[in-house]
Amino acid sequence: MKSDEFVRVIVAKFAVILGLTLFVTFGTSFAEPDLNQVPPEYIPFAVGEQIDFHVMFGLIPAGKARLAVLGMDTVDGQLTYHAISVARSAKAYDLIFKVRDSVETWFDADSIYSLFFRKRLCEGPYRAENIVRFDLANQRVEWWDNGKERPPIVVPPRVQDVLSAGYKVRTLPLHVGDTLAIRTHDVNKTYDLLVIVHGREPVETELGTFDCFKVEPVLRSGGIFKKERGARVFVWVTADDQRIPVKMQSKVSFGSITALIADYKPGRREVMK
Image (cartoon, rainbow, N blue to C red; front, side, top):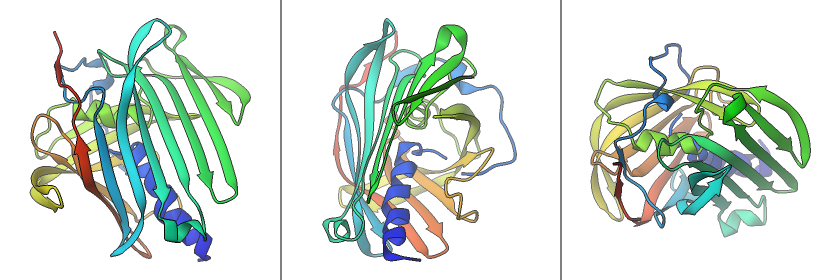
């Protein structure tokens, strides 16, 4: 593997993990009902929440990542949360292969489903931007690939994008042994996202030790790492009402990639009426 490809896999693909990937891998079963249709009783995040991660390849620093709820906006007359996931390569890697990726979502503030999505990739010389607008009235998405409008795609009602899916999971009750199902759309394809709750265990971080659920996100139609079919992704989220992701890990053929929480700034909690 060339050095630039190596860095791109480590850092850029981990941006994809954060973008959903707060919650996702590969599965063969499907649990009903689709939880997108179930409004949350409690929303654990709010404007101002910010979670920073160190991204490591083994013991080697590979980059940094951040999840943040930036504000409240209105999209097509609906009040939304505006959230973002960003990932960047470490300075030592910038000379080899610079990565500056971002994924943004605008999702309904009450029921948590996507209304607008934007993904920008800056990986070495590669540049890409995808924009998706969810037309709920007609159950379709309109999307643009690097500024070029593409034919609309039919989608189920209240579908998630790859980032809003993670925030949706944080609103759900979790129990060891559960398999949860969330329908998710990523630019030009829709798939079933399963969230398998494997167990409960402590996770040590520089912020302290957290009691966490160990979750494996699973894509019904394919894996996160298309070239790494054996890769599995695990996410550790706090076992309290906040469901904060504190650790993410994937083992691939050339090693282990880990993101560990480095800083957390809470937003204001809100209880649904």
